[in-house]
Image (cartoon, rainbow, N blue to C red; front, side, top):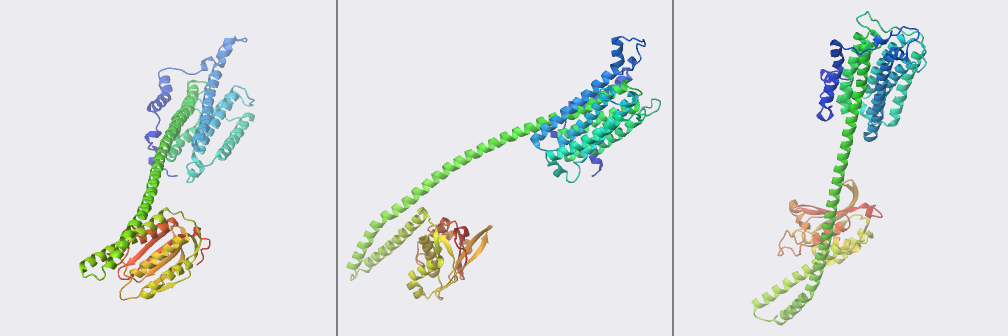
Length: 564
């Protein structure tokens, strides 16, 4: 433990402070008996101890003689009742925050109160005790005060070690073990005190220190107030911890009354000390009540905030659901519109091309070169329009088509594509190198379309002075902590700047003019849509003048066999 000066006067946050009037009241009550005694007030019952010396005292005389015992019992039982309320409220508090520090300290206070109760019962002879009251009462008082100070230091000190957070999380089993240990120690002390006929003398009226045995609890309470409790407040800040620190003040004042003031049973300092001991129990009770109220309020506020957040989240979820429904409906309508519009455009386009063919045929021998050029341009535009409509229809079908997964051998798909591109491959002298490809779960038609577009692109965007070389390979990789089958299609074509890597997957996006390379700019958008339909990804790396590499990632949970 760190015993720095800063620990002696710990800085207490505002939320853990006791109300100012409580602190002022405690100090005022502790000082009041000294001031009132100085002014001549006497709170003792010693004046009635030897009244009515007649052999047959009246009933009133008997009560006068016992007034000291009555006052003593009343004060002690009041303190014990406060201890009972402390432990009950401590367990109620534990049921809310599940922190064992409060019930353990509450049990320590209760055991101290139980020792005080024994002290009272023995003094009033409600339990059997061997020693005389003149020795029993002061000795059991000193014993109960030592027990009180020690058990509180132990109960609080066990939460000041490095593993105090771990202890705080222990449950009811830990509490029961500590309770049993405290109870056993208390019972042993009670039994020894009750059965001992010769108890040591603890009162020395003629000495400066009237009760030397009470010096021990005085020192212990000073240690608790200057070292143990400040550390506890620092490491486990709460209103209850602050109140525990404040309760040391009446405990110390109690011992001062007994050590320096009380010279006999039931005198003014004796009764003042017993009264202030009640305050020492009541202060932690007040702190526990305020802590309980604060904890309950915090729980209520947290619950209300959680309900508001939950309601807000539900509202946002409902709004998002409505938005998603509208977006889905809009997308469906847009896809249907694109399909219908593209399909409806086919018929007039076919007529334009048919009549254009006839016109072109009829004017093949015409000397009007300008008219022939117009017709050729019209037919070329019609062909591009037809390609655009076909690609738009393909994109629309991919977007709206439901995917039915089935085992697909990628090697078979690539063979089919190469068979259909046989003439193009031969004319361009393309070389295609293929490693062993896996079997995955996919939609066969979409896989065919995917590889057709990628191989067509690789051949189309080749260098004029170099034959295309295409390499298709596959391996299993980890991506974002998930296992994927990676298929790579690399070529040695013209490539492009890497900054356009995302742009090429957008619809109608082209990096080259129509006069340089044919195409509509939809092919790669279809590839991306196909991969999204299969819960996969498509990425591209390229370098201008070196070549391009497309990488396909297929999730392995879609694969019946992921071997390569």
